[in-house]
Length: 209
Image 1 (spheres, rainbow, N blue to C red):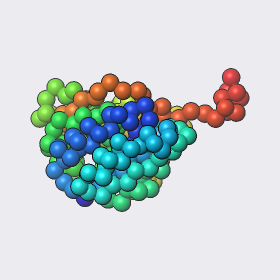
Image 2 (image 1 turned 120 degrees about the vertical axis):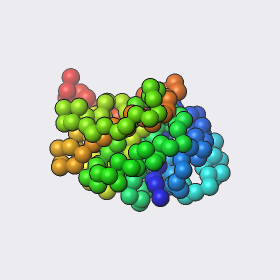
Image 3 (image 1 turned 30 degrees about the horizontal axis):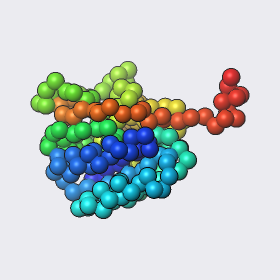
């Protein structure tokens, strides 16, 4: 089994249903789905609830009416992830590869100390092999489709203004583990609003000015 975590800012909530459609279509292993919506009112979740009710597996819909931004959304949703591997999938991700999970999962089987496997959209070839990252070349900032060892992800949580995937990639390598890139996973991103990773409280903003 696999956990899939979708942190969705309310501005991108309309993108969620198709993201779930593609996950169902292209994921060849059973998975549990946790969606956490960042901002907005309860009545904005109706369409998402309907889509999740039609989902054939386990699911949970979480919601913060006041935005907590990307990193806190991830931290809260990770509490509900119980399987060994968790995929972080933003709502703008459109998977187009029915072997995506196998391609990424194999790395964890071959390298048990791997903490995270990251990806890039619009791959040139779906047969490109995985690449073990070096400490000076962590995952790129802005990656929003990655597969993580759940235990690892929950042991080093992203806080503040850091990019979560870049952070986990660095942490894996500095903590005695490994980080890999899987360039052969085929997907693209649709137009979307960026999910802000963090925003300092007003008091902290004033002190830093």
